[in-house]
Length: 140
Image (cartoon, rainbow, N blue to C red; front, side):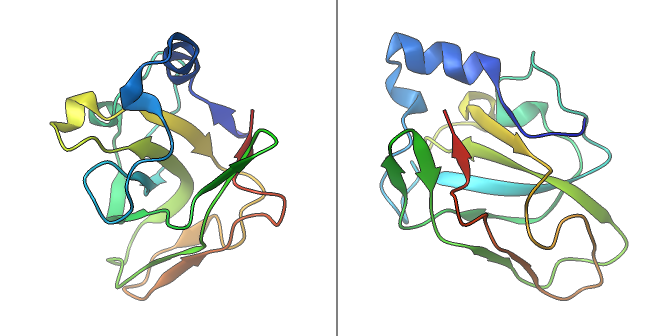
């Protein structure tokens, strides 16, 4: 898929006010918002709802810190993935919310593959720094 997308099933749950889907989880805890680098082994689907639907996750997912939600825009700190194993092409980032339970309950928030500095990237064992757009990570 080319183009950023908010997962429809996440939007459905936030409209219902489901607590597991809020973006203000405690930083450094099990309830944060995380970003996973994914390769072309993963194909976006509007039917995907939980982290367990992902394939091709490479590197260690990173927590988004200093989160802000203002005027419908979600933003947070830029990310650094350290020592990402070589040999993959990372095409996108998937945002999800960890809730401390099994990854079959971590809701997918957004699929991001455009307007992100340093994506796509070919991994080489080094660090990968992701710089979010100055206007924010995504808007509702």
